[in-house]
Image (cartoon, rainbow over all chains, first blue to last red; front, side, top):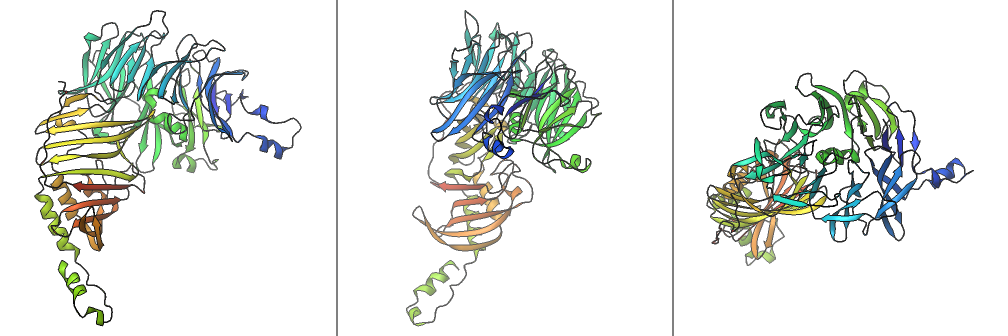
Length: 404
Length: 232
């Protein structure tokens, strides 16, 4: 499977191949009556209804997505699971209140990496809660924890769920027949903990009187936590898919919107490769590991143009290349802002690590060099080698690549 | 100078004369007195509220209000109210500094940690000096009128300031953007009571951001102790 799921400007869900072929409409067409004129067809487009945040299942046969319907009686928010070929769908959760968990975001959806189980965050009358649907048709999702703020990662085999809830780091295995739950306190300014690909180690940030640091601990024995690196005011971390590095974005200067350093550290802390150092003056917003682990993409803000730059770097830091400037759509903005959570659930990278997909509008330089450029948010496929120009797949506000 | 306007208004034959425009009060000496008072500030309680907008505290976390008490030169106790944008949630961060020792509750939770003082997001030990420098940096100050504020007769003074001159008060302030300032100063003793800052001070601010600083209990005794629950 090598498909891109995207939301068009009308709020309907499609899948499409990376070359723009094999387009499949998964929602929306059923609302248009047969034989209706073009004008009345347009009127029949359901302006009171939209889908958002499509999320591929690990085997890419399904897509979970939020659906929002505005009725006279109130707004109805549900979570639907669709067949990625046919669009046949099943509602797995209906919100008890019309609350969002972030701007334009009814749910945060994250499939467990195996077993086709869906975890998600939803705003409930009791507050923010994390739910799990076990994939059984007709069976409701169950609440597995509550609290805020909360960030989490599944281990690759779904044996461990690492939750950072408030100041508590929780390690649990809710999918096991013999579930456990253990926790410890951490004072670090970070969001999502990072589980090693083999599921044996969790990395996190802690703050003590000696300062702030990156810690790793065996999940089997939390007493063996070890500090492997000093850190600044706030940080974001993510393990490479092959387990060879932990990428760490850090703020040497507190109280800004951006990170100013990006390093790769070996899990034993022995080798540190600096991709962006603090004296470079970079405004790093987000980074995403390629599935191949040989490179990562980071997104930084150009302070002059106020546009985002997509930059590709091999893990040795040599041959860093800017491949695209753009202004993100509102949904992409959210995804970039909370990349260390979304990277686990929504992929911008193609499965072969050769391309990326983003939604937004082209930056000024790209517009000037490209003659006529359509306006509004569009879906662009980018060559990570920077050899080919961006491929415009059409109008869209959010695009997610299927998993490997 | 301040009394000239009042004296003229109370003159016994003023009703018989044709209306005259009131003498303009010179803002400069008022500000000078305010600077002197701030340089001598010993303690105060304060709140810095956002009437519009917010201040970035870290990626994805925006501060809406900070309030607390300072005992100059080396003790402060403040509470920061902030919003985490994803998943949307509200948090409070408490910070206590006592001389060289600092304590802070976690942004993502409420537990106290003893932390390096240089790692704190704010340094309020020099609040008086900070405010004195801000008042001193005001350009083209002008008395806008009189106002009774919380039972205190104040003069309202308007002016402009470069955004970078606010860096000690508003973390991350930079650039040479001109920002509108309004100050309320006690007519009696020249103590600063309130400052309204309108405009983009930090790059990430909305253009219509408005911050409201209120000082109270000026030079009143205040006791600031270490938090009971400490780790480390």
